[in-house]
Length: 279
Image 1 (cartoon, helix red, strand yellow):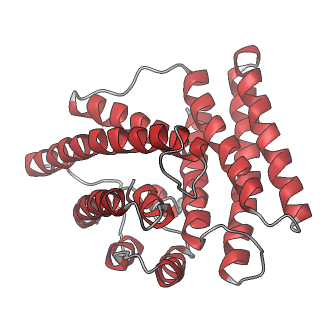
Image 2: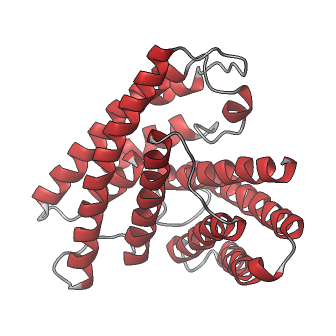
């Protein structure tokens, strides 16, 4: 969420000083929540989740430093360094105090998410009405808002000690659609001369679109396996793209942090798929 807000902050025009300030304020509020979460997560979260590279990748800190330097916008890299140092513990005993800490973090996150959703919807409406100019696709604003709404739904369920009731297709289709849109965004932000990369991005988007169409008609184990294979493919593509952008070997208008951001989301989805496959 804080990175979504960073991208808004750095893609609004100088005339939008009030909206830039609001994006920055919300970003800083999420940074505070993330810093606290990283602190309490140390020695608590599973080693498997840490190893998934969904919190940070080998590129995250460098991507933050370069993107901050190029845009002039602040990123609290101390949080990322704390995430690199996270230690896992799958056999941790959860005391009441930790339960209270997590509930408090969740509640504050819910409050902020409601503000973010309203803010992003406002920007989307203004953009659609040509009342602001923002160098983010309108579809990307919608995309980010859907992710915020998805996160808010999960947090509200966790506060009630349960999980969202979603069918397998609802869960897979959400993430497969997210992966498809990532590929479309990458395609649209690559320089026209990067023809091979653009073709790969376009083919990847179509592959995930097909998975969404096929979900109901395909056996559970088959759709999970197909989603897993496709996500491994886009993860590898994103990883190579992030490295290439950081080394200035790829011509694009993709900030290094955005490349790393979508890579981490692919890593997260991969972990979910592997969990589904095991269960």
